[in-house]
Length: 288
Image (cartoon, rainbow, N blue to C red):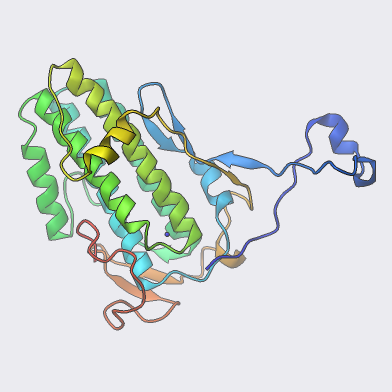
């Protein structure tokens, strides 16, 4: 979701190791590199990004293309659809899963914004709850919100949204080459898998049943038979306030408007001028 890396930090374990000189280490011993957990999940399946640990895992790469910028903005807006939908359902049915998973979606939005900030991309603030500048996304939200006439229907609608997210992330990951985008999207997919299973628990508790609509039965079974997933650990490369190539956040290298259209990028032309600059985001759930 150009590769290259920054110098890896080395972590000495324990006070004795901190004072130990390299020459004192056994020949076959190497110092461990510090690694961080990007995703956390609790026993109910509520899954959030460890946002302070996210930016330090990013590599320095080429700047984002217009399509990558538009794709990430589309991802942010889709996480907002989920957040707003679960908040709407919670207002109708004050059940903890809607409240807690809705808060997790807010955290996912922050994770995408951290990635955009890492690349010094200017983006607009979130619109008010239930409002979207993209007409297709607005229709999707309105349709989903209208589908939850009972708590069982609300949980089923939420499960369908998470299943759709898993399918879309699974599909777009085949084209992602940027390692930092890949980290975020892989973990978005894991979070959606955890949330799908959490909603299925509640459907079962209410006496309902669920049949996958976009995933194959095999894909669906593999997800629901697995445990809640924290995802992979990653080597720590820098600090929480790092930016791509160390160039600071005051130097804007790209921008995107509220409709999800890239209006500037330092890597090639904007998407309205050059439609062949990459695959990320094309046709992605209401994205450009």
